[in-house]
Each structure stands twice: as C-alpha cells, then as structure tokens.
Amino acid sequence: MSASAVTALAAAFLLVSGAPAHSGPVSVTARVETPAVYDDEAGGNADADDPAVWVDPTSPGRSIVIGTLKEAGLDVYGLDGRRLQHIAAPAAPGEGAATGRFNNVDIVYGFELNGRKTDLALVSDRGRDRIRAFAIDPAAVAAGRAPLRDVTAADVRPVFAADESEVDEQRTAYGLAAFSDEDEAYVVVSQREETRLRLLELEDRGGRVGYRTEDTLDLPASFTLPDGTAWAPCADPGERPQVEGMAVDQEEHVLYAAQEAVGLWRIDLDDAEFDAPRMIDRVREYGTPWTYDTAEEECVLDTAADPGFGGEHLSADAEGVTVYHGADGAGYVLASSQGDDTYSVYGREGGNDHIGSFAVADGPAVDGVQHSDGATVVNVPLGRGFPKGLLVTHDGEATPADGEREGTNFKLTPWDAVADAFPEPLTVDTRSFDPRDTD
Image 1 (spheres, rainbow, N blue to C red):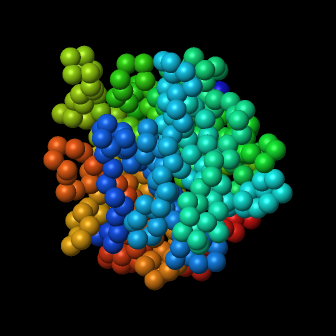
Image 2: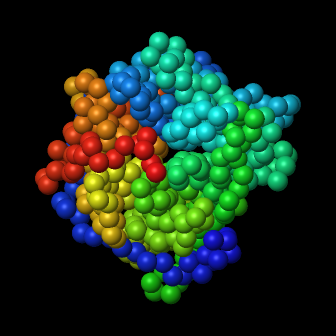
C-alpha cells in the first residue's frame, strides 16, 4: 500500500476499545535487573532503551537479553542480569557527522546467510540511519564467549535519508520490529519526528546482511475530532507525531505500532505490503488543545479544555509494544503507557479489546519500572529462572540513584507473575508458540 493511499485516514479511523476488567492497574514485581547505566561522560553516554530476548535452541536457560544503550551501543546480558558483552555504536564517519546511536532491537531466527541458518539481532541505528545486523553464535553463548558479531553489509544505504548530509539532520531510523514469512525476513522501521513507516526485506550480500525497501506507509499527522474540529498532537515546531514502539504478531502478520502522542495502531502485513491502519486505542490526551511555550521550549496541554475524546488506558507517550502468543489466536498485545508508568493489555483476537493494566512496582530486591520505553515478552520456558516465560521491560529511572546521576536499566519479570496478578488470570501458554518456528 502506498503512502498516499492513507491520507484520508486522518478523518476516518475505527476505534475499538472494550471495557476494562477492573478499576486500576495490578502490581507485579521483577525478579532480576541488569546493571544500571548512566547517560553522562563517565558512563559513556549510556541510556538504556529497548530489549530483545534470543532463545537458545538447545538450552533455553542460557538465553540472552540484548539491550540498546543509544550512543553507547548494545549490551548483552544473561538471564541472571550479568553483562556478557558490550558493543560500541559506530563512530562518526567524519568531522561534524553524527555518531551511531542504537535505538531499538529485535530478533530474526534462521536467516539464510552465506548458506547457513543464522540468528540475527537487528538494530535501528538512529545516528547513522541504518539497520545494523549482528549474528548470534550459540556455541559462543554455551562457552561463555561474546556471542554477537557485526554482519552488516558495508554498502547498506540510509533507511530514510536521501544522502549523508540529510542523515545528520536526524530524521532517521527510530523504532524497529522484525519478523519472518516462510524463507523471507523483514524489518519495519519508523522515522524519527515523522509519521512514516518503512518495510524492508533483508538480503544476503555475500555473507553480510543488507536490505531493500518493500513498502512505505504514512500514518496521519492530524485528525478530525468527533465534533468536526481539526486537531494535531502536541509537538515541537517542525516535528510530526512519531512512532517508536512496534511489534509484529508472528503468526497473524499484524503490526502493532504506538504513535506516541496519538495511540495504538493495528496494521496487517499482506504480501510484503502495509494494509490500511486501524486505531485500537487512543491516548488520554487525544484531542486536548495545546500551546507551545517558546521560553521553555515545550508544549503545554490545556487540560481544562479537554473535550473528552481520548482513551482511558494509555497516557502519552504510548511506547514499547510486544505480543504474547497463545493457542488459536489467543494471547495479548502489551503497550507501555509511559505517562502513568503502567502497561496496558489488549486481547490479540478480534477487536483487540482492552483487558486490563499492570505496573512493575518496587519489590524486596529489585526496584520498579518508570517511564518505560521498550518491552519484550517470551512465552516459552527459559530454564529454572523463568520456567513459564519472561517479560523484559526498560526502566527509565533505575534506583537507588548514584548521587545526581540518572540511571536506566532493564527489568526481568516472570510472565506467570504478571498473569497471576490479574483478578481473572491471564493465559500462561508455554507450548503452542515457538518463536523459532514462525512458518
């Protein structure tokens, strides 16, 4: 579907939202956390953002968590939270150019690379507007060696920019979600400060990973409200409402995309093309008038004039999205409601009705989660530590603080702890879906 084919969606989208199962979020606690990182010179400008889980094919308890650190690159962790490997982001290619900045990460299993099935960690490099590919070596994981190796083709082009000078303007690759369709592998990439999504197909270029564009989609930047008035989300001058958090339902080939100041979209992926988007929930702030404070360089919402057209479950920004697969289409779509430090849970079936919400609260050994960007959930057993699956969430406010330094990290929570916290427990299904078998 072409970008121009969806311009009319700004005035005509379908909102489907069921009644919440209970009045407020339930609380869960994480079991493991990764080391805190710090976004300052001493910390290497490390800012944790988005996690992915690679499932070990022979010993799931050896599975690893891969987390982006923006300017600081990537960290790789064991399920006990220990750091196993650090990968620096690419240096600037020249004076005045932007350095690499790793934003989002996802996994593709069994990509045919140089004649061998290879598992890949795929990363959006916001700084250089590329997709970076890292081969994951199971033998290295088993031996305790650094498991990731850069296999990005040297000739990959910018995802969105027309040339290198445009890369430095930083309207670049931002959010990322990967999926497989039989023998093909794809990534969906969003553009920073724009509404554009791009679908790329991975390709083997002499034993290195490249990509080519298959389709492009522009989500709406402004909307017609139910009372007939026009509204655009709050943004800095020149910016449009961007998407970051995304995930693909691997069985149904449905993309879920969180447009931060707008809401959560559902977009079918049909024959390497985007179908028409459908909004399944709005942020609470949807439709609220605003002004821009030039002195403070920030938007100011006029909450007293809120017309009441927003949703009930997401507080802007809508962020990290992940899919829990259950049998016969059952399961859940999880989205981070960053504005109130919760996660909303939607059904995977039918109209994606809202089921409830939860917060990762302070526990006896691990602190809670605030301002969460990325998340990923795995349904399969991951050893003795997480025998009924795992939820990994970014924590934008890791505590205790190191003086005035602001720390971030990732929290690991048993999926059954999340499921059992609900008055009507969520599904725990460790058998019906294998993330390694997506045909």
